[in-house]
Length: 157
Image (cartoon, rainbow, N blue to C red; front, side, top):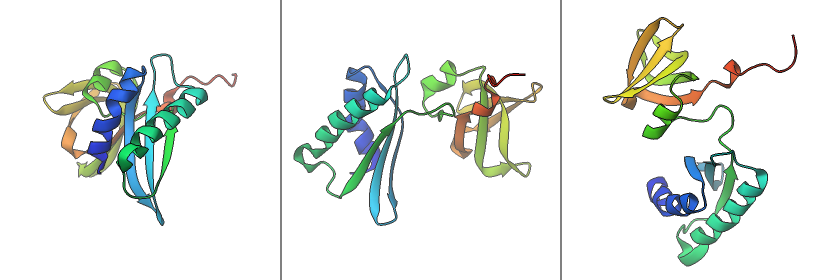
């Protein structure tokens, strides 16, 4: 079973329980396979939510031996620097600070930071330094995340 098949199997169950599958990683790390699920809920996801989803999703995967390899299941929050992948995320997080890494350089540069302008016609718009609107082809984007370093500092003045 590959990552797309696992996502197709688990997404309906996650959504039925009021959750959202933000990201899924299925990879070999050292000698073992790891299935990492990053979940969220409208009001955030708690440790108890993660434990509940882990039990529920693990049981679903174990039914009928859907994954034939031995693996470790990890369920967690996407964190403050959550990945932006799905079409609805581009609308939801438009106007937020982001960091983008390209697969292939654009004018010699692979990393950009700015404000997410959205997704239009297969291109991701980023307002760089509040002045230059750059459009990157989605297929050339290696990773796009919220920029947690742009969050408000509550440590004092």
